[in-house]
Length: 180
Image 1 (cartoon, rainbow, N blue to C red):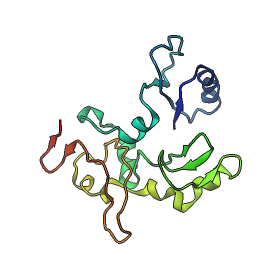
Image 2 (image 1 turned 90 degrees about the vertical axis):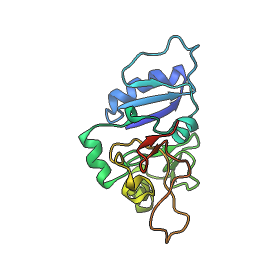
Image 3 (image 1 turned 180 degrees about the vertical axis):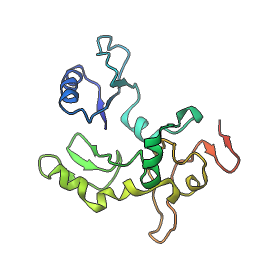
Image 4 (image 1 turned 180 degrees about the horizontal axis):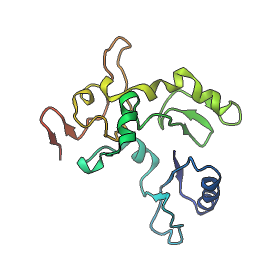
């Protein structure tokens, strides 16, 4: 499980203890990290990014073939789930639990709603189950089961057969080429 947190020295130390206590957190990504923080903790599970959370979660895309994840577990998960969205929960500063960063729907609030009940909700889990086989263009891509695409799929109409993405992918499966 990956935890995204705005960088601060205080929380950095606390997260070391959290990760020891809850080993399911495999990685922490600190966003809004500036190079001026020279005394940051060097830990293999900590990644530091100068970008905003929105840039990391929404605007990032697969840039080249090196971005693909060649892993049997990822491949198998991708056959049934969207492995980048599966089992992900976004909790903002207000404690609102959502599927993703800019989701308009709030499924619950920390301290008010029980976390396990929120993530067990079928409506909440729906986005986890949207495979690349159900998304226009992705369904035709030879890399769909190893692609770490963070774009959020949507449908214009409930009756649409396939989901779409608002942002185009840099790889064109029909021409087998990368956009520069």
